Amino acid sequence: MTEYLILFAIIAVIYFVLIRNRPARKTDWESLPLLNEYEQQEKSHNEEGQLCCCYCGATEMVERLLKSEKENPDNTKYYHACTQCKVILWRAEQAAENRQAKD
Image 1 (cartoon, rainbow, N blue to C red):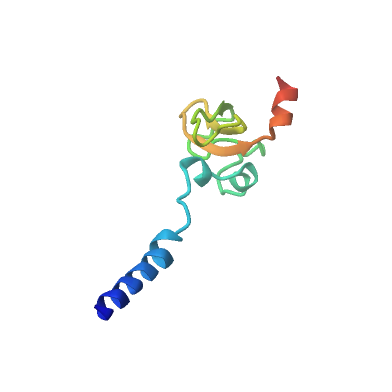
Image 2: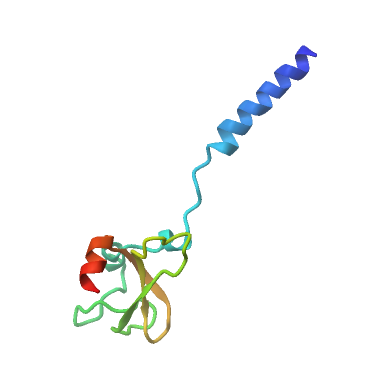
């Protein structure tokens, strides 16, 4: 009986140390670079020094609100995408006070 209790205690310790305390996975939005990180990439600027899409070279970007209620309950998270190839390039987060002042 004592062996079973020791075995249960070891399994419980392993569960809480290895499995339960694992950090949460990054969301898709969190895995995107911030603007300053995007600007440091190799193909983020064209010959004229303008910020551009690193995939197609277009200079027009669109800012869109992250629509997930779970990830963005305060409506402060945005992503920026290329208007030509529709690839999401970087993320941005604005304070709720700043967003309300803009609107």
